[in-house]
Image 1 (cartoon, one colour):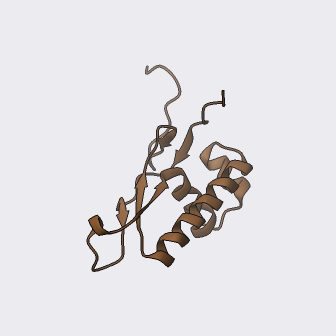
Image 2 (spheres, helix red, strand yellow):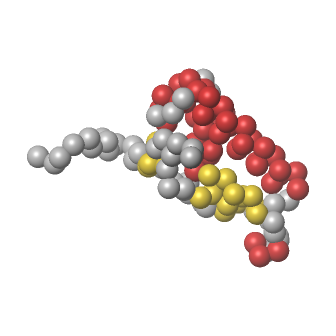
Length: 110
């Protein structure tokens, strides 16, 4: 039996959950499911220009996990862009949201 996924910290939920080609109703489009942790890896490495090691430290996972997330995310985004598919972003059970300005609470409340 495989080990359960390690929790992955993400900055927050995106402003939009679905991106699609203009002028085509969502119901007529094929969909690509992009997990929130895959989007976070893209954000950290491709937008903020962090190394995979730095991104892994921020997400609480290994560099190898970030590499796998990036590879999957880039393939999904390329597929959607090239083939006119909608991108649907989902959170998943193993993702933990970190809200900027809030501290992660690690113990009983005083």
